[in-house]
Image (cartoon, rainbow, N blue to C red; front, side, top):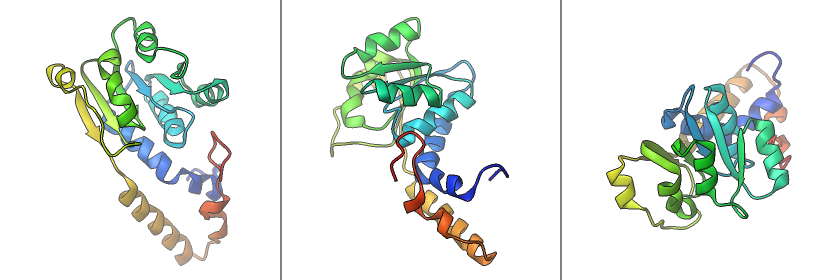
Length: 193
């Protein structure tokens, strides 16, 4: 960690930040790209917005209310779309001059797969890290004929290995582990422990 970041803040990064980093990495976005991050006020979404902005992307995000829009904007979102009151496809097309986004980083594929034809352009990517149902209906004809890359990611085993290694290194050097206990962490967007 950089010297100005304490261990407590560093420990809060954990799985949400690693998942977000991995999702942004495999999405292929960079300077001049556009990305829709679903659930921008949530744990992974909050970090994905920041990582995407750091790469120079224009970030659109879905939220469910004004308070969550404020959190997403503080993370760096350029456009917040309230999926409960707005047409996500229309808002994405308006924000991208009817091009569609280069990538989606999605927290709930079973709910959001249906949006693909309304938000993506040919040869874009749909990166999935979560699902609220055991099965999802995929717009397969659209995905296949437009060469949409779909990637499902899971970084939990790698994140756990890294976290356990970090704790072991701290103990080996006699550092206090109490500050890095997960129960003492608050997510920056929600304040929840």
